[in-house]
Image (cartoon, rainbow, N blue to C red; front, side, top):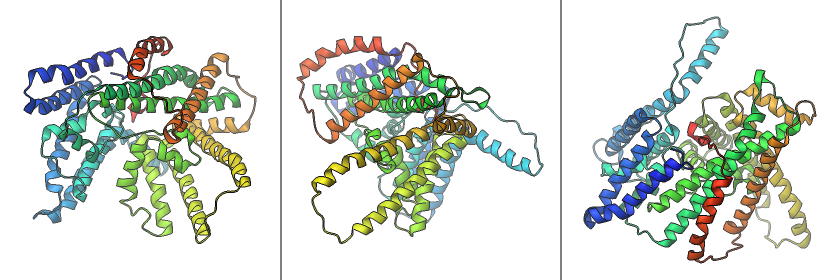
Length: 497
């Protein structure tokens, strides 16, 4: 049930009507909140089961385990000495299930390759294991809850209904953002009214997400797939085609994933909930560090809170701090999938972040004790090409690393990158049917983020549109989007993670 599909529109219309119109007329006010939670819980499981019903039981197992164990993980009491062991058992259970479904064949294949080097070739049968939709997201969500309870940062949720809804709330269930209990559970104790401002905010975010997904990502996807096709490990196109593939996938990946996050955000707002921000104009960054403050923000925050800080963060020696930083991004890479391409991609991100962090510390020490002065005219003038150079560095590195992220193997990624940076005309020249949608989507994404940067961060173009005029515009926008949307929309890229 893709957010941009007609089926989801009918599904959500039914949930929305039940939530705001039917239940208030059927249930007494003192039981309305509970009834709404129960209805949303049922709807969430229907939504999840529409992909593969059997894995709804896996989601239920995660929910029951996290809910029940939390009562014994909270600080204090006679069991305090055993809390650490129980937490370890829960983490091993959750990570073990994630590893089985997502990494079984990856680790087994690499183990067999390793023992094969010494001449041992066991007869092992690989299993075809279907990946449960969104397992990485709801595993991290469950882990954050039990760890926060163990740390004493989150109180134990007494109501199983509320906790089950937190674990399965359908707008964010299968592709994030990763929502923590601290953010979501308090919202279940408050009643929110449906008003025009909430409708307008939800409509804006959902429409923006639909444009990103159905108009940009789905339209550029066929051209990107064609360029990344590499039979026999050979990249068929010339250097311009290799660069177009990298640019096209960068535009597609951002539009697809941030489009899902925007639609999830809009859907949650319509139902009276607020989800955490997941993207903030990441291609406007001027460093990889800043890029990761803006890209998949809920994952970056999770890795920081539950991996990086747990290892000591920056409260350790210089070398240990850099190791913590690098390891955190190796984990981030491995989280994305069972392939060495993801490990290399995450490692590359970690290495460049270590370099930037080291340079930043050196600059900070160098400037300590120096008086702060207003920049002169020359400094302001020279800052423009400097900022442009920093942006190019960020964008070229990010675009190049996306080649590794997208490629099926390290050899294919290496072939693609060599083609990009050889600047050779050998190979097929991309046809207009390929380069036009890629160039258009890239320009639209960059201009859209530039406008968003001015609007949200610089507070420019703050024009207040009358609400009646905005809602009168929506029917015409819907007709336009129907014409502009790709005729065959694909699944969201991050569904496989």
